[in-house]
Length: 186
Image 1 (cartoon, rainbow, N blue to C red):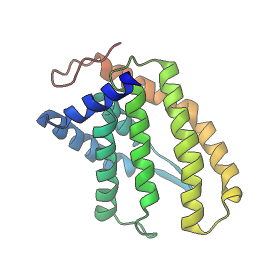
Image 2 (image 1 turned 90 degrees about the horizontal axis):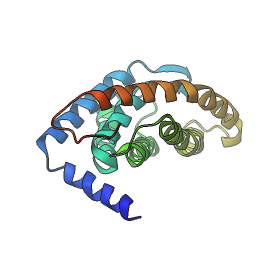
Image 3 (image 1 turned 90 degrees about the vertical axis):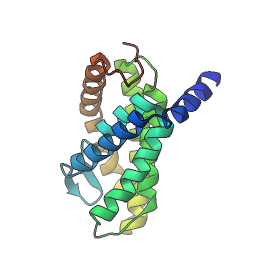
Image 4 (image 1 turned 180 degrees about the vertical axis):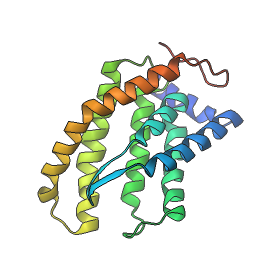
């Protein structure tokens, strides 16, 4: 518990740094751009890569900064590119929860395949499958149990691919020497 609270405090202190705000803003912009490369299979099944920038922000600056970045970015994305369905706060909550989970798993931690797998599995189960299905059920008026099987299959099939992409991205960034970013264990 003490380690958890120290990471939260350390993440809060990151907000005092101009480099944190600048790089977080760039990651938010990259997130929005990567959002254009999302493939919509059905209204409730989408495949995208913007999770990579969210995880990077969580790894660099922790759950607090990453959560603020994701929440702000989600609202900004809606105002810049409104969707036909309108704004839905449940998806903003999902965006925040995802990066908070990534921040809790990766911030000041050694990046391992096991850690990446557990982080992505947590996001998949809690955010994508449970909450995402609930929000889609509410938004599109479809039965929760009716859309759940397709979302479970899609997320579990995509899990290994996402783990490989995420692990590779984070390990490459761990090796990059950026003076303004705290040293991350390898």
